[in-house]
Amino acid sequence: MKNHIKLMKRIKSIIPPHIQPKFKNEKDLLLWNKKKGLLFSKSILIRNKAMKIQKTLEESGIKDLYLNCSFKNYKVFHSGQEKALNSSKKYVKNFNKELSNFIFSGKPGTGKNHLAAAIGNHLILHGKKILIITIADLMSKIKKTFQKNNNFTEEYFINKTSTVDLLIIDEIGIQKESNYEKIIIHQIIDRRSASKKSTGMLSNLNYNSLHQLLGERILDRMKLGNSIWLNFNWKSYRSYVSVKKK
Image (tube, rainbow, N blue to C red; front, side, top):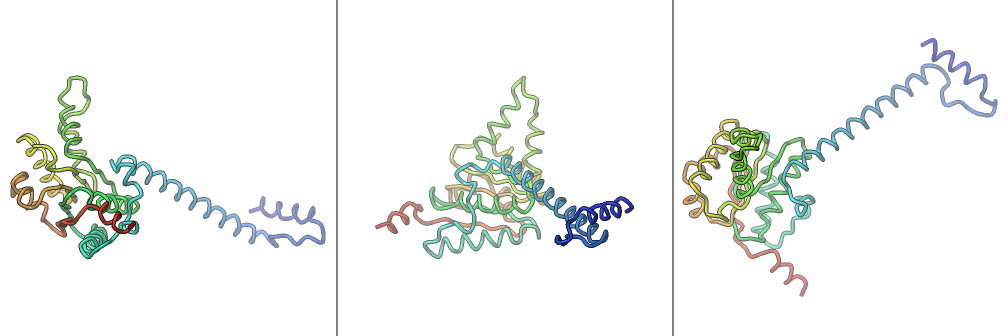
């Protein structure tokens, strides 16, 4: 306090008479310093949050093609796409309320990945940890744990995929899955369900084909809580875009 008083007196002594000082007394100076300190603290918090979001994005598995996907830039050409968009928005709105799984099924190019990435990007901005991974990459990473020089175990990786806030498994049904792969998926879904962690699945298969592939137990787990199943049963986006250009 004494230092501030001395500083004010010194400033007053050197300011020309025609110059009006910004601070008339030491109280004004203290208030100014306090405001500057708060602004500086806020800037640090904002920068730290941005760095945390950037790190989460890098670890999310969201491909460069889908990094900018959002609900706002999802193109709607008909009621089916509008329903999918609104359901996805409702999904993230209710994400924290209870277990929220989703399955997006339909042909390639129908917007499944866009909305899945939009969900992931939205949740990341709200402090959630996301992992999007294809079934092929998932199994490849787990199988690498069998190698002698690998420092990670199968248990370690299964546990890692079981702890993120939202795990999205893409391309289910693209390759013919073995019994071992089904066991791994069972373990991951069971652990996530028990921990009330949400899971998303993307597939080109319909309900009957997915039921045959994954089994009733997994699909029952995927229906728990505030879960949704959306059928993207329309033509590829490219067909709508080409019609619009004509």
